[in-house]
Amino acid sequence: MNLSLLSTVWFDYWSSKYYQSLALRNQVLRKPIHLQFSNEQLTPDKNDWHFGVFFQTECLACLIISPLNGLNVAKMRQVAVNEKHQGQGIGKLMVIEAERLLKLRNFNEITLHARENAIPFYLTLGYTLVGDWFTEVGIPHKKMIKHL
Ligand SMILES: CC(C)(COP(=O)(O)OP(=O)(O)OC[C@H]1O[C@@H](n2cnc3c(N)ncnc32)[C@H](O)[C@@H]1OP(=O)(O)O)[C@@H](O)C(=O)NCCC(=O)NCCS
Image (cartoon, rainbow, N blue to C red):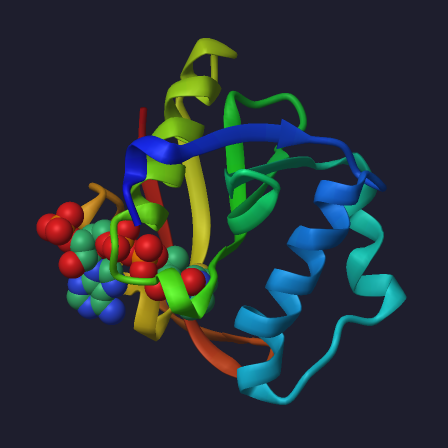
């Protein structure tokens, strides 16, 4: 994939782009661990910020930002790249662009819960590990942070 053909965009909850991103999240983040989203798990999506990478109208990657109240800290979650397009720089492009836009909105720190497989990806992007392993959705995670 030629990265210069891709566009990055914030999109609304309940939009057609959101439903594409939800399908991608299900495929990439839930299916491999034999889970599906419950309505309760999707409730926070309503107030969060949705960001994605698109080739024409196809969603290739997405992430969600939860601004943490009263702090200039954003939690990044649900980072997913279509399996067919992983390892081509799309995840990196998406996270770097989201970081740039968050910095413009006066955020100075990003925090996230990384799955074990994704830790090398976030290390490459300058995130640092904080604390011990914990379990989320039945699999090990570590907290990581980056100062913007
Ligand atoms: C993790 C994920 C978001 C990375 O996105 P990606 O598009 O595949 O990664 P990129 O191609 O942009 O890689 C960026 C850099 O990270 C490195 N990297 C990515 N995954 C890596 C891995 N598993 N091990 C080592 N390095 C890795 C790449 O080598 C690259 O390094 P470089 O910039 O020095 O060349 C994506 O693979 C994915 O969706 N995985 C499954 C879902 C998941 O685990 N999401 C994260 C939940 S916390």
